[in-house]
Image (tube, rainbow, N blue to C red; front, side, top):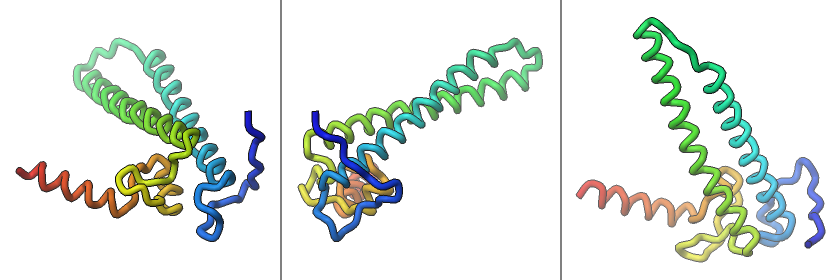
Length: 140
């Protein structure tokens, strides 16, 4: 088991330090874990809320409105479930030493992009090319 890397609470990865050094990896590991915990806590709250709010509403319009709200909440939770999977994948890439590098080009992904979207797997340029190709093929 490796020793825990010390990070100040105000630490932010900087361009002038070695890319994906221990401090940067620990910063992103903590960020991803915190994000995952927030999502899981929200999911638990949703499940509890759905269980508590199960009631028989006589008015058809009110019942339809509540069902629509539930469906929207469940759709949101499904997207977050998929996000948790991407977070787990990013954590695995950290453990395997592949985190922070574009899966297409192998080039480093910018720290600003990773800070904004820590589950990013492609550099901004590769992502833009991918999205352009998707649009072209979708229009066919």
